[in-house]
Image 1 (cartoon, helix red, strand yellow):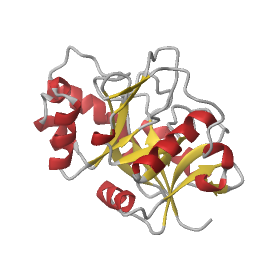
Image 2 (spheres, helix red, strand yellow; image 1 turned 120 degrees about the vertical axis):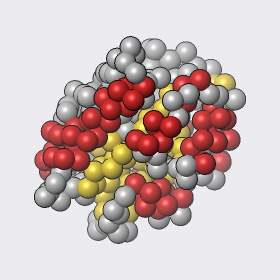
Image 3 (cartoon, one colour; image 1 turned 60 degrees about the vertical axis):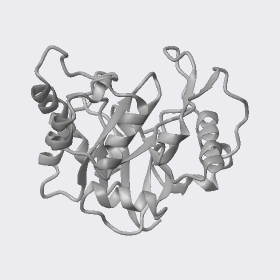
Image 4 (tube, rainbow, N blue to C red; image 1 turned 135 degrees about the vertical axis):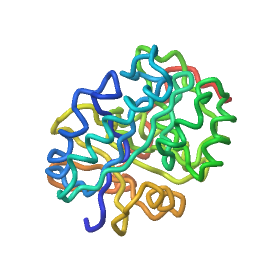
Length: 252
């Protein structure tokens, strides 16, 4: 398929405790998988973050951004664009934030103390958006599924790290809400398994253009195999749930 393929959900070993690959080492791998761009979305301080908690706020921000900055530096002169994002955790419900930067993080040093509504307001005041990441994820460390549509600008309907049924539940959720849909790999290490991403009509030059494309529904969520790219909406098992969630659902 023709277009600009971008990874929207990626973790580095610098800032995500679960990340296995340095930001600088992702570049050639992502190019080999056919991607034209990637957004580094490491776990923020309230998630599975690798940044020590005993540092000053500005030093924590420096450390947090180091994976992205190493990736950006390594991408110079190569056919892969690198952008910055954040994965923000509340109580096992996580959101991908697109459109904030270092300055915003430094200026919002009270962000960890805010409610979901308050964070959403801050994000919107910055002109950024929040996309509900893997809304129906089930793991042994998750007790329930928390859903709060009022703070969602979009829904991640395909997360390559999730089983098909959990993705299909996310797709149905997005359809019910009528919200923009995204897809991403949630990649933490090199592998040959299917990946996810957004296929945009044209190249973007900054993350705000990605944000605008999402809100204008100009991107196509896709599954990325080694030999082909397929729109998620053409894969029935990613659209029609085979079973209900096993965890209780809490509507906030």
